[in-house]
Length: 406
Image (cartoon, rainbow, N blue to C red):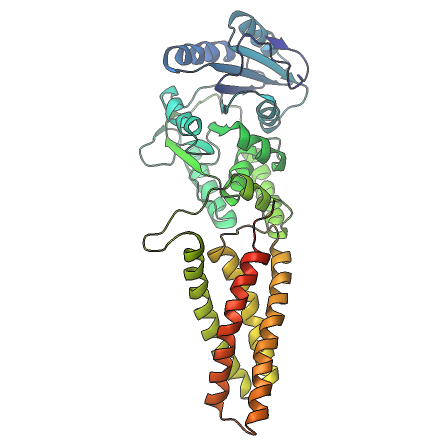
């Protein structure tokens, strides 16, 4: 089963039809290590994996005899396929093979098999069951056993600290060459991943996390390959460039992560004592509303010492309305990411206009009835008006601003 050029989507022959698992091994000039790797991996899967599987060798423009070895293995094993890509790039190879595979679960591992294969079943089992969306082997998770030099250990931990500080990543190990993803998730997620090299893994995980997907981590036994050909300095520079690019994309809302969240994102876990559904939304909305009202009263009181009632009301209500929309977007209605944030704030300002009309009307009626109302009466009237405006606000946020869109 060998292919010398980019295959079409249906290019895989039917010797192994629709496997459950497709393990991709991206290689570049690995003529020596490829055959023992594939033989060992095939033997392990044949003996321990209870479902149909495929091993896909993704040759990245090798200039030695790697492709010849890959074709020979594909000819010998019905469960092995060889794909040749004319351009280098681990990310490019993974993205292509994963988006063209017919397997339910897609995985990859490095050709040196630094990660013990005993972690493969724990890696893919939550994806097969549907419990998780992606899975990663982690050398930094509790329970992992790692043998590597101090230099690589320092670089790995520093890189993950940078990811936590810049992109708020919560996964522990971005670049362990041992990962898996459900095919339905890959179909929707991978078109957003731009990197074609070593940063591919990090970008994929960050976007998955921002879209609300569940990432399962498996502690692994890992032994460093002393003959690794990875250029640490150039790879680190490309990773830093990738972090800057992804940070910019997330901050501008360029990526449609909201759509991905609607398609694949999981609902927030229930919180003890807080009902779900409409009741839960009302409770969370009430909490945000109380905080917003207190902030409004304090801000209005501060402004009222220097400007008129209508101006103070306008400024206080506008400031708290923007903050209220942002808080309800995330906390009450579970909308995360930058996608649609500007539209939501614009609609929130329309709702703000309705609240302004209610509170301003209340002020106008109060001043028409009482020539010079005292400050406590004025504030009390505005609090009542705000309670009415709050009820209207919840209904409009729920049925208009943050309603589910198909």
